[in-house]
Image (cartoon, rainbow, N blue to C red; front, side):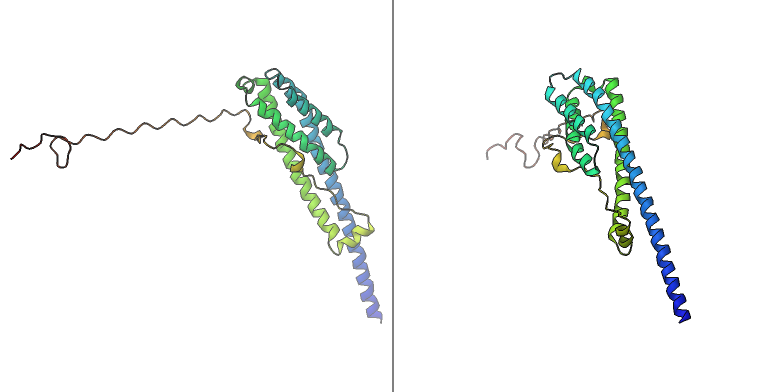
Length: 227
């Protein structure tokens, strides 16, 4: 009986230690998710801050594109006011990304605007921000995926239930919310690059050389005299 009591005590100690370790890991993962989301929010705010200057620059060359500017301004206001969950932020990001693509598509039609130094600088900053945002999004979603897997897996789900650890939301922009049918996709990495020159047309083929006079089977030459 003494040996079994010791075995049971050891098992209970291992369960308690494992539970504490699992709980502490949940806390660390949740804090890591919060930090990752803060990085996404920082990049989103940086992108929002670029938009007024970008709109102002494009307006100087395409003032008649009033509807595009209004759409961008409205979508930006909705996105900046979305301070709720990642899902709510993603829902607001869809229309904003669509409006931003429309604005950049308009800029493609004005060569003088594309050569404007201020516009090129804004494009470069926007491209860098977009790259950082995508990196932060992948890091955040990766941490959410690992955390949610533990929340839904046995035996860690027992600790999650007692510790009130709920699944976290992914940050994914819903394509159906963009409403950008027919709007060309803009590659941020190619903005400001010179357009590819069209290939030179191929030289026309030289006409075939005429067969020599009097050659066999030729249509030229003096016919033989009648017999």
